[in-house]
Image (cartoon, rainbow, N blue to C red; front, side, top):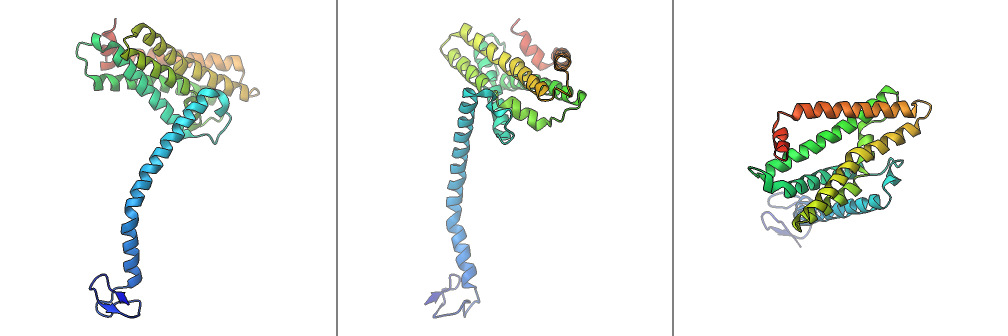
Length: 244
C-alpha cells in the first residue's frame, strides 16, 4: 500500500497518486534531502575540524623540517597563507600586550589592525623584492609560488610569537620583547633571504648569485625606506611614535 505524502490518498500500486498526481519518487527524493540536510551541516563542521587539524600538522612538520617544502610544489599554498596570517595576528597581539600600558588611548582593535597592516606591508616589500629579482634575471617565479615558499617557513616565527604572547601574560616583558624581535627578524629577514638564495642557486646559469643577492638587498632597503617615509605621517606612524 502506497500513501501519498501530499493528500494522504492510499493505493496499492502505481508511481503517481491517483488523486493529486504527485510522483512518489519525487516526494521520496525531497524527503531524503530534508533528512540529509542536518548531516550535511554536521559534515561541514567536521570538515572544518579536519582542516584545522591538518593545518596544525602542517605547522608542526614545517617546524621540524622548515626547508623540506621548498622544492615540493604540491605542498599546500592555503596553509602557507594561513601560516603568514596567523603569525601576523600573534605578533600584533603580542605587540599590543607588551605596550598597551604606554598607549594614550589603548583601543586594542585599532592597534591590532594597524600592527597587522604594518607587518603585511613589510612582507609585501619582501615579496616585491624577490619578484623583482626574478624578473630582472629572467626567472619564472609566480607570485603564489613565492608566497607558498615564504609561508612554509613561518612555523618558527609562529612558535616564537606565541611564546612572546604567553610571556606578556606572565609579565616577563623583557624576554617577550626579545622573542618578538627574533620572530620578526626570522620572518622578514632570514626567511626572505633564504628563499632568495635558494632561487639564485636553482638558476646558476641565469643569475649570478652575488649580483642577484645585491639586487634583492637593494630593492628591500629602498622599499623599507619608502614605506617608512610614507607611514611617518599616518596613523601607523603616530602609533609607533608613542614608544619613542
